[in-house]
Length: 188
Image (tube, rainbow, N blue to C red; front, side, top):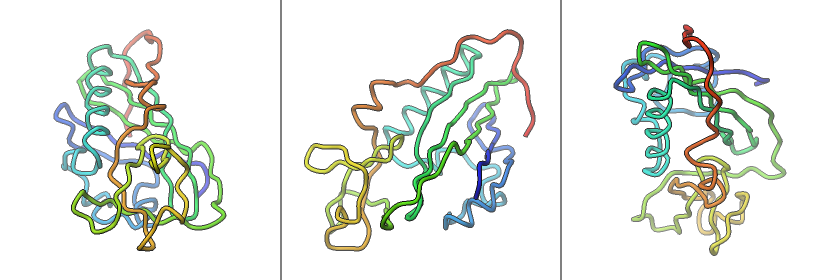
């Protein structure tokens, strides 16, 4: 899939009101279970966000965008097993308290070897690694590294719990953009 932007509109309670862009195509290409348009509309965004720290950052960013009436941008990674995807998230508040969230693909890089990642929990029989929700690196022996197939030990997947690495924490709560003049309104 070439450069694209996927967008969604959240109400004041962070329920998904609308989606736009190649939403279903992207969900289907990436094996997103229960993430098609039909499945997400009316649902809280929190049902689809992994990791307490990631949810906390997003709640803070949503609150900041609404209170300051300013957009927020944040680069992050959204990889598949074969492709590294470099994305940009833009959170834009509307005057009615809703938020428009856009995820734009900046570039892609092909991996030398596929890397399979699965969300796990502390009860997993395999070693669970922290994975940064923004840069996509995994923690290995106190170092944050690009995920590699070697991180997968006894299974073919790297079992992860989502967090935010120290490098990305330095830029929290996000790259807040300067105040814009006028109201911010758009429809999906």
